[in-house]
Amino acid sequence: MPSQHVINCSHVMAERNLTIAFVESATGGRMASEFSLVPNAGKTLIGGLVCYDACMKEDILGVPADVIEKYTPESEQVTKELAARLRKFMKADIHVAVTGLTTEGGSETPEKPVGTMFVHAYLKEKSIAFHDTFEGSPEEIILQTIDRTAKLVMGELATT
Image (cartoon, rainbow, N blue to C red; front, top):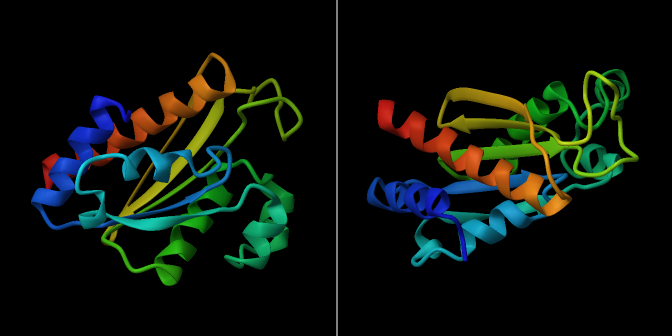
């Protein structure tokens, strides 16, 4: 069952006839899945792409290899590229990209430890983003990221 944050966000989007699309790396499709579980999800959810490996970011969405190499696949810069490119790939009012580190073995450093997650969204033409470091199991990190993203979108919708 999706969290109350996801449910609330979906209801507000439905009331405003807004649609959402996702491109996900670290969350592996879980964000789109959570939004799909809300009643009447068909009115808001366009779909999502999972690009877990860097080659998917390059080959499917066209993120330049030099950007991935310079900043790492799990970075603010790559996440912004993914969100921008998703806008050309899927028609929606809201486009959300997420990358991050839920387990060891990625680009973690002392400054970017496991639990660091990056989200970038476009609400029509407005660009918004956050990165945060969450604690817990990989699933807990993912669920916290989903809730934080739903709150971010809700906050922006409240101001428009």
